[in-house]
Image (cartoon, rainbow, N blue to C red; front, top):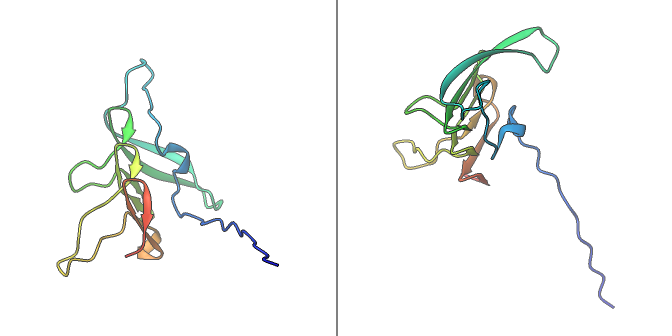
Length: 119
């Protein structure tokens, strides 16, 4: 007799903008968002308001050169390309740089084309 069990494990991601992934956004005039914008949001842990910079290209979150697509004032950053978590930059030793760096560098997550990878 063979018994097989499937265990589904939910991997929690540390992204603070999960609902933005893979979506296009328009401005108040109906045009796809471009450039960058500064927003003030209510901090999820109840510690008051927090500033966030969002960078857009063709309505999707996307890095702008060396600047990440998402920057929170508490140092949390997230790198995107065409609306997907992505960062293919490498350290001098060839290892992948993280796409998400949470508060003060811990924890980190690595993504290529929206897929989580393990460096």
